Image (cartoon, rainbow, N blue to C red):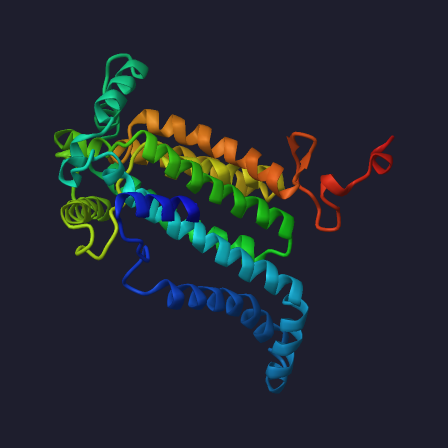
Length: 344
């Protein structure tokens, strides 16, 4: 992804930017990591020293040695750095999409999209109906809009929290590396699809369909993102920011399906598995209802999310042959197990 970012930036004469310019990444991500590590250590130390407060410092050091040997420092910090590289390059590749398809004129980029084809596919799948209109008619445009707006915002928080759990708080490194690698594949393949099939989504290509929805945090976000796109397309160097609009395929759906499949393979508690699947369904409804994506985007996102779980299983050794299966921490990777040791 880093190589693709550098290549496209050079070919199209585009700047590479920190994806979150408000707080620089070199400050924000060390702070996030240190905060996550503190949340891993401090509550345990407070609980263990609750009857003998004077031993708090000694207990904190003991827990740090127990929870954070050198091997886990390497796993967590290496994973966070690799994850951030994937995230930052994904955001830049996504921002490059209008310019790759502008045919030399970035100002015309917003016209060169596949939204008409996506909308036509949706009507075929929904027997001549617009799926967003169907949902608006069935669910109304009041409470449902607020609910789906909340779902969308929760998803935004869920992904970095789940990454922190996989890299910092879990001690099952095989499971953590499987999940983080799968999300990285989601971003990598998602960026490639964005570049091949650019689209902006129904909310921008057909805004009248969503005119009756009330103002929510998501509607404000949609307006802000379009303003950023217009600014970036108009002056990519002077804008100082990235545009983040690309609809096909839906990575909201893709990454959520990745989460669902990983929690199933890892064998987490039943309530976590059920909640994940319910939230996936709500995410599909939210993306279509609010106009972020066409229904075909959700289908493509689901296919993407399922394939990346398999790819990540192959890449991290969580497999038996070509079948995904969680590898326990003490087990060697399949590639180093001899034929004799697996016989019988």
